Image (tube, rainbow, N blue to C red):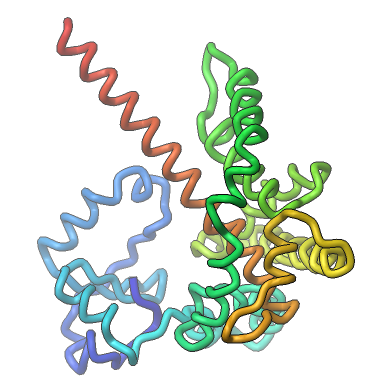
Length: 287
């Protein structure tokens, strides 16, 4: 999905000829089965304008490859978002904008390269393997706490497990783990465009402020007292592009939280659902 890139070569001057839709890509019914929707849309057109998201949806392989190779297109979706905001909304969004500016996924080269290099050096198999026993113990505890008569798999397992593992990796104090899980959820709503009501905006922006405050404190602490966590490695690391600023470090830490949490939760959930469906199908075949 491309952001507000009207006039970009992949769309071209024929943008007005492509169909539009008000479909919400993050609605529960679409998230539950996006493939049926994409197949239906692709049958009519491989390029759509999503009015709700103010973005182009590309469904054809050739168009996607062309977009990925087009240097005139940018991963910066924050700037287009702000263009659709009032002056009051832009001021309100400023803390989130400052945080997300440190996310490599919202930057192209050379800034993307500069932000990625120290994170790549810090996030290694060794940094994960040293926590293997802690992760195994956490997994056992979460499984033991499940109610065998029925439970919400996402809420009780797939959501908390990756959040706490990332907290371990970053060195987040144990007493902040519950806050950490909630902040990740609220930040995800903001990044994925699920924020629409005023109270949801408030929660997402509060989470942004709290994350910034926590990581700023941790960065300052690790400058004085280095440890074995990822924050210490990021603070003490450098690359050919130089060291990251404190704002960029906060952005890198929050991106690791969101990127690792959201994807791992989806992986755990989809894998488990697939295994359950295979098991049901196997049982039906035996009958």
